[in-house]
Length: 108
Image (cartoon, rainbow, N blue to C red):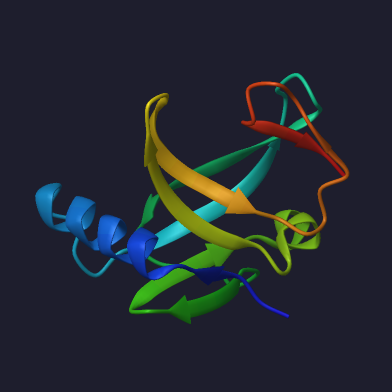
């Protein structure tokens, strides 16, 4: 299994990287405790992975995931959605057993 990113999300990541002068950096994806359902996602740019990270590359985007987060994220697809309620990255995670009303936290 791995972690993947949709074409739309990859384009958005590259657009942000260019605008913020972060070209060449990867995306750190992690799960952090908190949120109304127990866990939430954290996504940000980072220079390079650590020795412990699982690393993936999909559609030209490098993804870095720490071992603890990976157990919750394996098989996840990152998408980018734009809608009436705002736009942002969305995580299609097959490991999620429940989410909260706001959709930004989950339980596993």
